[in-house]
Image (cartoon, rainbow, N blue to C red; front, side):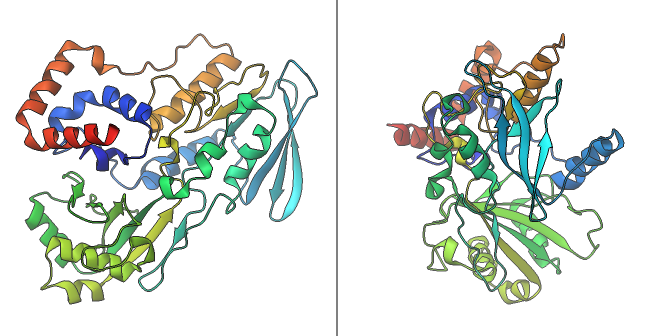
Length: 379
């Protein structure tokens, strides 16, 4: 459960794994049922991004669509780093946005979703690299000759180690959801991640609260799943997951659920869309000191680097917390605000957390087995 909940794989960074153990140690007693998870009413876009976007627009924030920042222009200096302009391409045309006195340039580096590719019930998604989409090109360009901006190649050149494959199933018949509820005992939106630990793909699914999308029809239900080992062969569909269509992935899932009797009906009334994300766990890749830059690089007068590939000591990547803290650091420091960055929870220093975690490990055979397996992987 620890591996599939947080998406760690054997080749990922031991440093990141250690940070996760410290941060989420308090969840060990309820990790098996994930009762500590708080889910949004709808998907993250409809529940969080859409209302946030509307609020920002009401405050006068401009969102420039179909626009890519391709480079930053810097003021010539041997001691300071000052951004003077953004070089952009918008709707195929080159443009330039000047950064004036008193302005600040906040730049997100890297991307977890760059190069995302979708398949269909009958087609296979493509495995893209860093050259698709351009999100990694900006970081590589500004980091050339500037070690204080980090080393993007550490994170964007190992797609086989950073990629996972997910899938969304749209169901126009209630049979599959009813059978999953009977099988698991959990109603939609209340249960934990369901992991098939014997699966060659190491597949997991989540049955969301329904409806999961605004304006979702009453007769339609959805579920989501992903696999950590998409380069491995399936147990029933004898192919690598990356070589499978949506229908083949859904078939593999139905076999693992042992829904053989209803397989034809479910396949006929469902749509499974596979999705390959080449860089979704790039933030977990092994790294050295300096590969991730500071939020405000040394010597910067107006530039902050944001996102999952900056270094915030003791914090855990692949979380919204990480992005928010980076933004707090940038805003509070540049605007000289008398505010403290939200403190990082450190349960490893709480005797009660340590006690409850130890008791859980001693009582829970599954946790003991998983921790033993993790320990063997780290040797």
